[in-house]
Amino acid sequence: MNLRFYNTINRKKEDFHSIDKGKVRMYTCGPTVYDFAHIGNYRTFMFEDLLRRYLEFRGYDVTQAMNLTDVDDNTIRRSRERGISLTELTDEFKAAFHADLKTLNIQPAHQYPEATRYIAEMIEMVQNLEDQGYAYKTEDGSIYFNIAKYDNYGKLAHLNPEEMLSGERVTDDSYEKEGARDFALWKGYKAEDGDVHWESPWGKGRPGWHIECSVMSTELLGEHFDIHCGGVDNIFPHHENEIAQSVCATGKEFVNYWLHSEYLLVDNKKMSKSLNNFYTLRDLLDQGHAADAIRWMLITTHYRQKLNFSVNRLGEAARAVARLKMFHERLENYKVDGPESVDNLVADTHIRFQNAMDNDLNISGGLSAVFDLLHKGHRLMDRDLLSQSGAAKVHQLLKTIDHVLGVLEMDSGSDPTVDEVFIESKIEERNTARANKDFAASDAIRDELADLGIELIDTSDGTKWKLK
Image 1 (cartoon, helix red, strand yellow):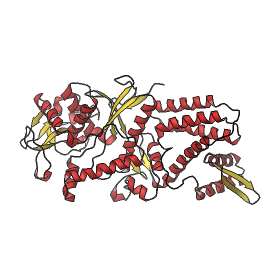
Image 2 (cartoon, rainbow, N blue to C red):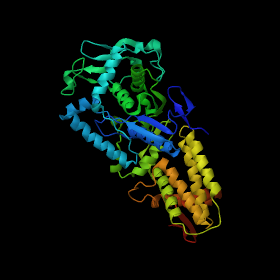
Image 3 (cartoon, rainbow, N blue to C red):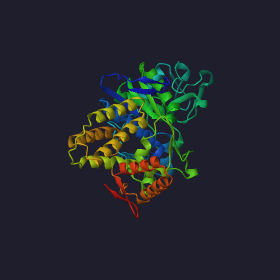
């Protein structure tokens, strides 16, 4: 199967072909650094990490740039509310963001461009757009992009051209599709900006949010690159405006593949502080949840499906990670030299995992292959049928796949593998199944616990358990 991604701009899955053979240049939207990133943000960052890791699994040399928005409406407003400089505010949350990435084992990008370091280049692009007639100046010293001048405006978000309000202007960085209108490239100075301003040909002011990413991406990755990512909330207006600016400024295509992750819900509701279901990564860690379980929950729902996050389900995620870690450890320590060859099993698992992930990162299909391997591997080791060389081959495949999953080497904090309440509840379920002569269900529970490295022993005093 060819590697395929769902390209938002064309609304279909397409075979992936990089511009330069064997190399991928990708730009991923990072945080606006005025607060701690929340788990909805990390759903997107985790998807971008999964994408990069899988491209590397497939042999691509990936160059990733992730922006840090350190000047926009939000950062200025928050710094003034706290009575500190813009730099003090953004430095605090840049450091927090990098610490969170490390906690979640998200691979660091090769470049983290900061908007305030590219002001001169932004002014140059705005001047270019004005000189070509794509932008105009207003009385307050702002420069606006004229959406009527770009024929393909609205293609990414599928806007109706008849509903666009060309000639009317919007000053806010974020707005809805219904407000599609000329947007600010450069914002003339206002008193509420305080000391945040730069000199420009139009007087002092600051860049609009959208021009920042157009400049930073093209400066670092070239005027035409492979992949641009973000959440679905970035499609409009941010990415739509990026396309318009960049294509008009350079005369080139800009980006070949646009990939977007869906929203995160919490217990089937939109995450909101007013609903008391708003979580940062630090909130979850402070509650005692392990980072590897959080990572697992964030990556194991397909990126184009809404993720229904639930704190109550983090225990399930921890157990899934524990199953992989115990299998990994058992393979490392396996000493029996049994007769069975696993060459076909290893090859089949690799093919199944790759075929699933090649289909627009079908993570559920990929994990199905992994857990089938785990189940069959445990059965072989239980019967002393696996050879040491076979165990080494399975172990190597598991590590190779974990380059994509990124959980085996993470710290689980407290040991999630020995959850006595969970084990006893499963034994009770099994007892009920046996009493009802539902032996298929009974065997399935025994197998589930065996895959966690737990052996059940039926005695005259009831069912006991021990770690293998």
